[in-house]
Image (cartoon, rainbow, N blue to C red; front, side, top):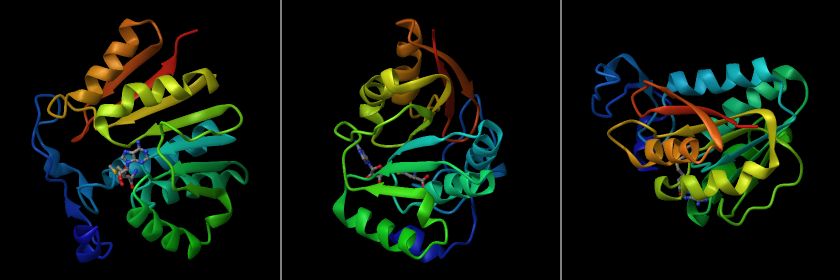
Length: 196
Ligand SMILES: C[S@@+](CC[C@H](N)C(=O)[O-])C[C@H]1O[C@@H](n2cnc3c(N)ncnc32)[C@H](O)[C@@H]1O
């Protein structure tokens, strides 16, 4: 949070380490090391305008930056909402303050809950999994029965260096639950779809 406050919205070169699949992370930008890469935020917004989801679920709000990029896409579509959870009460309070001041607040439902306990009603068209890395497999398994079979699941932090999320996605694929693509971004991004 301190890093985000110090940067005050300025973009920095991405500084996660180079990986075989992404040897030049410095070609990407970031606000801080917790918030998704700037290009991934742009991609999220574009996915929302491309897929026209009614319901987006995000795990790991942090300061609500990715939540607001998703909401921006929804606002352009003219419908839909994003439900995002953040389990840390201090971080949640900060995110809540920012969302309350945002013109996009009508599209956003922020919850101070764990992704492993949050109940969301309805069919999920887009799931953005960006919480604690070791719980991602469990988290995706939890929301999978509610996924639109034509919907998309994005799992952030899936680089070969960070390993755990990449392995979680590949394990879900081996179990026959997901079809998985590994995007070679600095922190890694999985795009997956439920296997019918
Ligand atoms: C990488 S940050 C999320 C960044 C945010 N999605 C963005 O790009 O702007 C991860 C956040 O998830 C929260 N978190 C970790 N495990 C969680 C869980 N199981 N449920 C909800 N939030 C969680 C952490 O406190 C942290 O703020």
